[in-house]
Length: 186
Image 1 (spheres, rainbow, N blue to C red):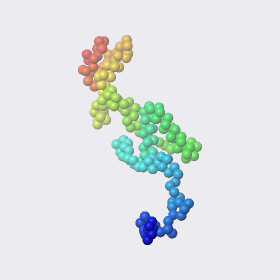
Image 2: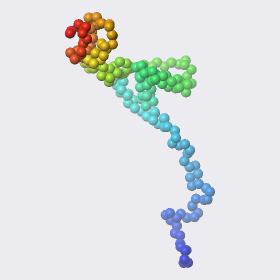
Image 3: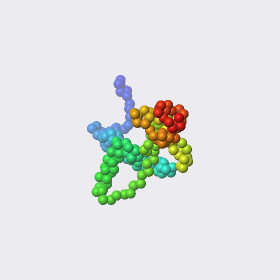
Image 4: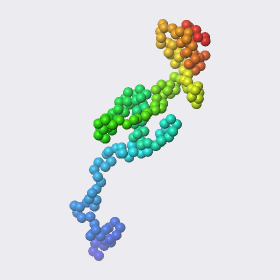
């Protein structure tokens, strides 16, 4: 063998010349599709089944339905941005379906954890007393919020009946710094 010459053995890393890729021709003619991963996989994410709890019962719905239920509940609780988004989602769904508004389905919503109940305890304004007993359950105001509310009326004084109602609705009335004019249970 002359200098610089060597024998090429076909095999791993050195395929036969007949089966090698031809010049100017791709080994993967279809290739990777363009923009394959640029879109958000809405269908796969929102199509997943999730478990929600309504009125103590569990049921399985799609993530999209759970999202719309949550958005609708926030809207009903007074969140205007959520209400607007919920209505927009409903309108978009109707337009995609080609609904002309003539067919109306009955929708029953139960506002779970909405309204005042949704904010009283998290903000520390009140505590629920007897939550398990539906006949006796009630909210009791924390002392600091009673004091803050009593500072608001200015010169207006509460009647004895109103004072008694506030006293009864206060969680620990003995901890409240009642104003000088207060008469009920003082």
